Image (cartoon, rainbow, N blue to C red; front, side, top):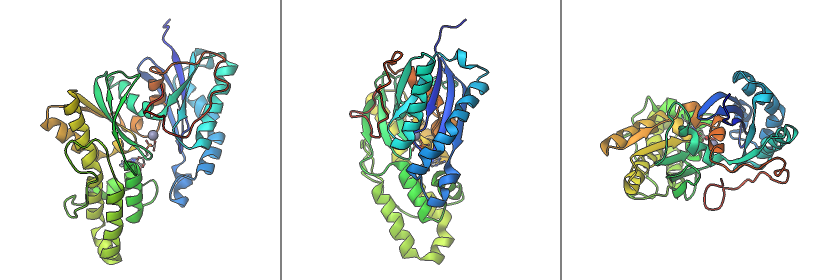
Length: 341
Ligand code: KG4
Ligand code: ZN
């Protein structure tokens, strides 16, 4: 019988209630209950509503993850949970659930950083990526580049100075009359448009720039839509979507590959919800090929929020032994210095 830990991982930092069973580098199950439809009428995630829905859903999602893995409660040897960053009420549901399960079953608890999870997603099978690599995490709340020489200590290279890429995607989608969540809808509309039809500013331009800025492009779209007027916008929606999408995805792709070249690293990986975007994948692939860099892309289900990635990061997180975690809590903010492992 294997002595590898069998990790039950729980993720509730935003609007997905997720649980997974991870053994070594394999997610034996990966259950995600999305609340997206619940938040659609509000045009964004309502924190209080998210927390309440996690509470109503988390136990069933956890049970499903254990069943899907073909396991029973007795097979689970440790519990991992997203501790930060995220919506505090939403995080608290996962952390309280994980602490209760771990305490009752006399198991160790691993308090995982959500961003560490996005970075570690490509470490899982079938990609099974080992360091060194440069990681791009682009999600609704975060946009960052890390040099990963050791998965225990990703080194922050750059990050957004204002909006996250996903936030810019969602706000742009809204301006173009697409619903929430905007990413997949914007990508669909953009796929029929011409990305060179409109010119949008690239935030913090410059080949060696490591940071990002997306506030300007968002404002540029707002003005463009206002100046064109409803009829012209309607006629040009696909072109606007494609051009706007490119102004967000190009700096992500270019700076990711450039950071690998500058760091002398041969591989780049993407993570976070925006990494599900096909155009970003295309741009990263083209740029990486041009400079002889290898680009790897986790399955889309491992890019958007999920618990398998939390189980992956748990392998690089220091466990709290039973019962030393009862005073540990959820934290809304990003860890100072980057990732808290
Ligand atoms: O990582 P994630 O699921 O949650 C956070 O940690 O924020 O990322 C959600 C973000 C949203 O802004 C969503 O619009 C964006 O990822 N997203 C996409 C796509 N799918 C999700 N953006 C562009 N294209 C997509 N296909
Ligand atoms: Zn995320």
